[in-house]
Amino acid sequence: MNREQTQQLAQSALKYGLLGLLCLVIMGPVATAILGSIRTTGEFLTTPFGLPQHGIQWQNYSEILINPVFWNALKNSLVITGGVTILNITLSSTLAFAFTRIDFRGRTLMFNIILLGLLFPLVVAILPIFIQVRQLGLINNMWGVILPLVAFGLPGSVVILRSFFATIPGELEDASYIDGCTTFGFFWYILLPLARPSLFAVATLQIIASWNEYFLPLLVLNDPELWPLPLGIMQFQGQYGTDYARIMAYVTLLIIPAVLFYLVAEKYIVTGLTGGELKG
Image (cartoon, rainbow, N blue to C red; front, side):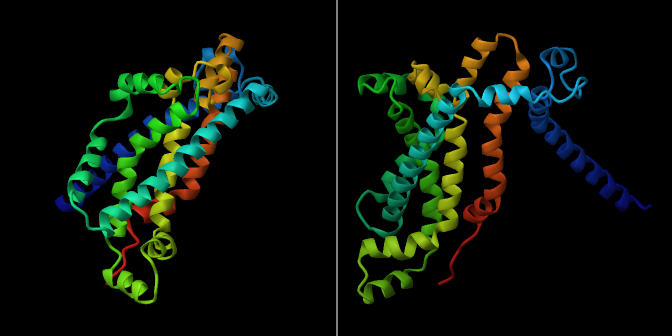
């Protein structure tokens, strides 16, 4: 083995070693939750990473699934996730269309102002958000969660859709107008169908983000009947005390929908973010 082959082997070993370490860091907590959910609390506390010693404890799941608290939290999560996704796609697509296809004064300035939103995550502005939500009377109201999530998800969505809309050749728009299409008709019947991969990518990112949101609902929703799934775990903690096995089962049920949705939508996310250009 010559020197060049040795260097390539060392580089490959380092690369795969780092990837393996990254996978371990990411999948370690997930594996802990899954294994803990099918064991007893005693087994989990003794060996957090071990296998079931007294058989798989499926009752950890059954006792959660027959509890109406879980299904109420699931309903609340679906309402919040659906509201955030629909509003985000509607607003971001219209804004992206305006920034790429409509010429008006201050267009670049307004787009740059929206881009500033990428610099400030929601947790940074949580205090003014809470004050604004309280002044609007949206405490203990799901709109108090939906509207801030839409606002802070909007800049990234606009950037993604604007990048795609900008690749649509102007000749296609001119041809549609010659055929009698209006501006709205071009947007609705031509542009949006072509932008399906990007729209799907935006929707997927918003679904995952809103499904996992914990901090904002914790501040805005004081009524346990309005809690989404991430907050619902607190009810199980209070109900079962230190029964970590059922808590791990609840966490597993919480992450399964997001993981499955991402696995199914991964191809569309990549296509929407990196592909789909049309050549003029």
